Length: 365
Image 1 (cartoon, rainbow, N blue to C red):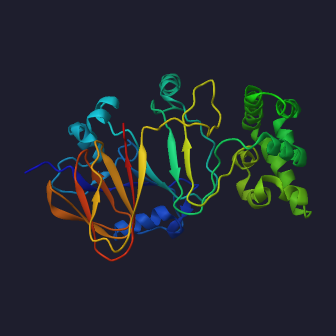
Image 2: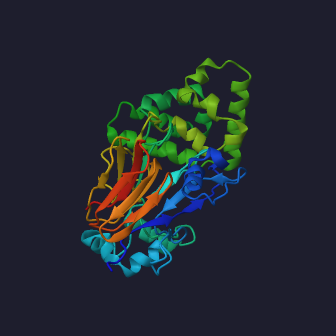
Image 3: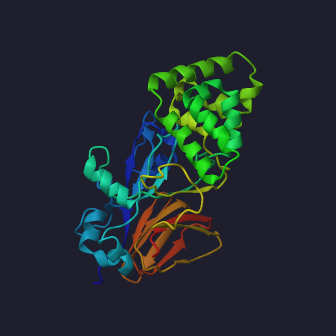
């Protein structure tokens, strides 16, 4: 019998504090839909669904004909399933972690080092940098979503500094003056000024941040504050409440908030010399996420054959998956996750005449 190279997975949920609670979380809904035995706790956050081989969230294989219990174990014994180029380039390991996020509050500001810097930091301080891999990220909005990516135009930031004294207090007089002067300079002057402003904000003492934010909340709650309503597209009034007092909230005045509808964001990795936000000419990432929308009138959908291992997620609809190497059909419903080995042919047959929405993560080299 041919070896199993296509099989369903049971994936790990991370319950970080910033996640949406209970059944309000899309992560929880996908989990419950894919496994009727799962009971969702309404008082707990469901932040991330991890689909991959990460040591803290290795997916379990849902096929009792396979001796290995997790996807990571199986790939270690079947490295050819990755595809020839992926196997050689990434030393026989799956090079991506596919996730669904359900976000309730602002996430922490994170640095994404490139491969060279990640290895260096891991050697220097493994307790803070437990992973030696780089982490470029791609985000696709499944629902209305706001994210910060890149810097706002300098003119907007200067306006915020003028109209929000609490914000200016954290940035400081010198960095503020440097930013104003950079408006008449070249791109290097602007980059240096933005770096200075961002550094001052991120390095502000927590006590000072809380103090200034409390002053801002008090001020805008005591007046109509037309000036503040101009700041950050209403995020000052909407975002600055005692529940959300933190540096990421103020970063909205420095960072660009993209249109939320079906937005796609890519966060490249940074070198040590340029650890700041950028969305300009991002490099091609090591991974791809394909979106498949299949009308309910289609009776069979053939998944594109790729020279890469991939992970497929059913977001909407129910199907049965078939492949020449597996005699039995694999049933998948909303929240179902399927691993597909490289160069495998898979057909999806809807079990109901409803539209399908499917996402597939892979590595195209």
